[in-house]
Structure formats: structure tokens, C-alpha cells
Length: 257
Length: 262
Image (cartoon, rainbow over all chains, first blue to last red; front, side, top):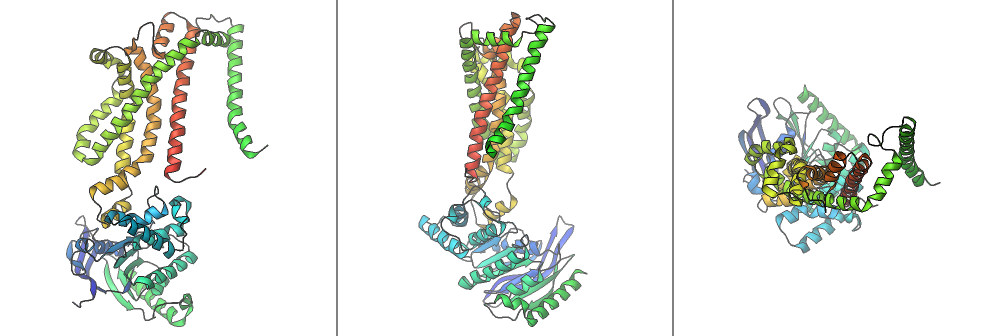
């Protein structure tokens, strides 16, 4: 295994209640610095795979390592890991600032460091110090998701796992947040595993797209995305981009059938 | 007229009008059908009964209110602690829950003699009755608030290697706050009812100091129906005051909790 492999899965399988087979024989290698999208039809096990990488679910077959060790060991070590859920999952009784610093509070870092992380986080998502005193219910859906991203990045993770974070947003907002996500990534270059079922989103964000098929979930295709970073919004209207989206869509259709 | 004023008038106007209609009909009925005052006293007689015995009613409301507040405070504290114990261990929960339901179903009349044997007549026993009657909703709401937590938030805490203590302190307890406010609302009304029932069976403060329940029983026994009506009004008033106070406080806490600004 090359030294820069961050996530490695070998013949990974997951069967729920001994009956429902969600994943079968998944082999996967993600190098540090990659942005990998998992795309597939509903129920193909892509979210399950993401939860296994996070160490929230134990696989029933095969092995999965993060930085050469188990996910739960990795997330206790310097190889920090963060997760962004489909819903913002903020604590409604905490202000924006208090939500952003929560992971640092749990890690027991100093107050000074927490304060610095809050300032960085607010700046990252374009909020002022006054906005930091607002409560989640005062924010729009898109802004809540930005706060969720800032919270995930507060610990400066090496690996960011995102489970359809923009699935509930309208198209314009989704594109905007896609661009912001790449801009945030340009600052620290974390590795990302991004679950989605939107082809354009996957193509715009990723350096590699893994197309999954259903019942049981397997990796049906591994599509490299050749466009260099940083990616301008206009990339979406380029001919090569459309061709790539068409190619991924075709593979997705054949995987779903 | 401003919109706010109009809305308030719409809220207050109709019930006040209905009240006036009912009082007028009540008065008319007692005059027209010449109903005997010990069966149904007219509104004027009741008003006089209130005025003539104002000091007595005030004392009775204070005595009952004291029992209700003690019982309410006890059930808030004990109910939260029991809910906490239930949330920490499934074995504790499943073994104790049936006995918590017992509190909900036990007829106070049946255990009143026992309470008197243990605690004697008076405030202590009234408080115990008020406590027993109002405890159950606090237990269930506290347990629910501590256990029914968004699974994604639990995953988030797990991902960040949170200790059991951190999950409790930073997630479960804050999550339970709105549930505890609901519990306080329900329990406050029940505590007042419990204190009045307590006056009835285990009050026995004597002829100098007594609560509303005792007053209700005494006036009923003596067929002083106008004073009985007045006592019922006082009991209702006490319940409304306590319920309104808890509701306003609870609403205020909840608004601050989620960062509403008025």
C-alpha cells in the first residue's frame, strides 16, 4: 500500500440484521489530498460506506483502515476526522459561535484556541462577530449549513466526510455552496469523501468519482475528473465538463438498472 | 386603533361578554324561578359571601398555595432526579416504571389515612398529597427529554470522542430543558388540585388556619352554599394564578433558551 493512502478498504461487506446486504466486496483506496465523490442510486449503501469510514458503523466483512489504523483509533490520533450530515445538526440552544467551537470544547483545548477557531470559522463562511451571537433558528437553511461546515473544519481535520450536505438546498444555493466548499478546501487541502446523487455537483467538486450500484452496493466505476483546481464557476458550462457529466450519468443509469 | 390593541380586544372581549351573559342569566333564573339560596345562590349573594369572608379566603388561599408550592417544588426536583436515573440505566427504568405508574393511578382517598398515620394532619401531609399527584408527568417528561435526542447529534458527539459525562452535560441535559418546562406546566396545575384534595382529607389544620379544601367541605356540610360557591371561585383563582405564573416563566425561559428576542 503506498504511503500516502489515507482510506483503504479491502473486500468490505455490510449486512444488516443478517438479511439486508448493503455492501458487498468493496475495494477502495483514497490518497491524501483527493476529493472523492460517492455517487449512486438511493439505497446503494453510499451513506453506509461513509459511516463505516467514520467508524460509526462496524462492517460485517473485510477491513477498512484510516491512516493505517481503525477509524476510531484514527479519530483519536492526530489524523483528525470530521463529518457533515445531511441536516445542519446544530445545537438549537447554542449560538453560532458556541456551535462552531463545540468540537474543540469536547477535545478540551484552551479557551484562547477556541476563540481563535471561532474567529477563523466565522471568517471562513463570511459571517461577522455579531452573527456569531445569533441562534441557529435566526439563520436561513443555507447559512445553517455553512455554520455546520465551519464547525466541522474547526478542528482542522485531515479527512472530511460529507453525507449529501447540500441535498435539501435549492440549485442556486447548492452551486454557491459547492464553490465555497472548494474555496475552503484551497486553504487547508483536507481530503474529502462526498456522498451525493447529483452528477453536476460530483463533477464540479471531485478529483475522482466512484459510481456505486445497488443491491448489494458495489463500486461500479472509478471515473477520474481531469479539471485542475481552482475551478471557476464557468467550468460548469464547458463542453468537456458536459461530456464528463454525460459519461457519469450513463454509468449511473447502467448501475441503477 | 393599532393592530395589537385590536387583537387584545378580540381576545378579551368575547369571553368578558360571555361572562356577563352567564351572570345575567344566572341572576334572572334565581329571581324568576325563585330558587332557594341553599340550592343555588344568586350572583349577588355569592359576591357578598366573598366580600364578607375576604380575610378568611385570603388565608385559606395562602395555606393551600403553600402546600401546592411545596408539593410542586418537590415533584420538580424528585421527578427530574428520577427521570435522570431512568435515563442512565435501562434496568432501573424497566424495574421502576410500573411503580411510577402506581403514583398516577393510586386513589388519594385510599392512602390518605396512611399519610396521616405517617405524617400527621397538616401542611406536611398536604404537601405529600400534592407531591404524589404532580410527580408522574415530571418523571415522564424528564426521562423523555434526556433519552429522546437527535441520533445525528449523538453520532456527532461520538465522532468527537465525547465522554459519557460530556454527552450528558452538553447534549442530554440541555435537550431536556423544553421537556422540563412542559413538565412544570402540567405539574403546577396538578399540584394545586393535589393541595386542595389534601386539605380535604389530611389538612385538619383546625379552626384557626385551614385551606380551601377544608373550607369547601365545611361550607358544604353546613349548607352555606353561597360561601361554597365563593370557596370554589377562590380555588379556581388560585389554580389560574399558579398556572399563569408557571406559564409566563416557562415561556420566558424557553424564548431565551432558543435565542428569541422580543
